[in-house]
Amino acid sequence: MRRRLLALVCVSASLLTGCGLMPQGDGGGRRTVTVWLMKDSASPDFLRRFTEDFERTHTDLDLDIRIQEWTGIGPKVQAALKAGSGESAAGEDLPDVIEVGNTQVPQYVDKGGLLDLTLESLRDWGGDRWLPGLAEPGRLRGTQYGIPWYAANRVVIYRKDLFAEAGVKTPPRTRAEWLDATARLDEGPAQGIYLAGQDWYTLSGFIWDEGGELAEERDGGWKGALDTPAALRGMDFYRRLQALGEGPVAADEEHPPQADVFARGAVAQIIAVPGLARAILAQNPDLEGKLGFFPVPGPTADRPGSVFTGGSDLIVPRNTDDREGALAVVDALTGEKWNSELARTMDYVPNKADLADAVAGEEGVAAMAKGAAQGRATPSTPEWAVVEADNPIKAYMTAVLSGGDPETEARKASRRITELLQVTLN
Image: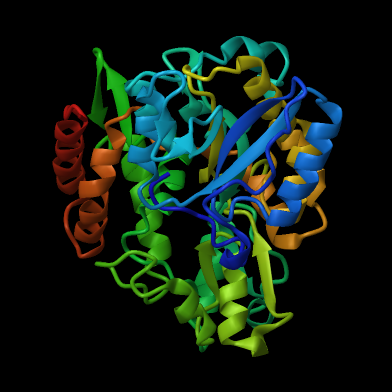
């Protein structure tokens, strides 16, 4: 995904390098599998333990795990996918397995060069149980190319003390309860909620809850869909919730960073990944023990609201010279044992909802895991990156929150999204 959600972790950069973390094999018939993983996705200790276990149980394989920077990774992956067998990518051995952002997968599929993993996902890897927000963007035209590894999504971070003072005894479970509780909180000394006007990831969840979409595939192409009745209902809920605080209508959640706003102590709630609580406490240690977490409420109490799911998938280049070794690595990293261990170590959501017990002991991550079961991703088309670069959704939100007619502004934004989705990426 273009904008990472990984405020969840803080791994010392000094422990990671751009070259292999593990020594390569010393011959004797053993083969080396080269794996590209992204910086801060897994701790060095996790990678050491995983490598030791993998090489012990796969006596013919050695792992060469190479840590990559997110900045500039797109062109580097594209170059690796285009390279011929035996060539190198930017001075490195060609990767056999690559970690990519879940919503990046369509871009790599569009250029070719990925191995079809549909059979393995259905036969061996429990693909029918994957989180939809990870699995769906890894699938294009019925073929599975990206294998879900880990997820992260937004929850509500709230002040337990302010909730108690306002008489809100339990976290709301429905949208109606949420609006009522937030209105009561907003009558006190703090904002009921700090919600920036251009937080389009959060808006997406409200639209999905209403049965709407950001864009739809129709007649062989993609078209903007913000002007549908369902999408307009999602925007109307966003408008009502956002009005119960003082979030800027013409800025997103990073301008200013909402952790900074929350840390100043005059906010009852924000919508963010739970790891943001660390940044809040670093700025305001007096809030220690006062922060709580609950899933974004849905229209009814039977399930949480829909949320945008970020995270990573694993892909296998078609030019790998060790398909068997690559599949063994994917199998191990995404399997129950090590996927659960990664989630516990890094405060992630595992790749299957039925593995959520692995993080049940952490309040914020447990809330995140409940929401992840209703997770979604952006439209599965390579051109969506162009939409995000221009982002008419943000301009639409600001226009509506500034008093513009929702239907008029939604039609305008939908037309722009349609135009952008007709762009062919080079």
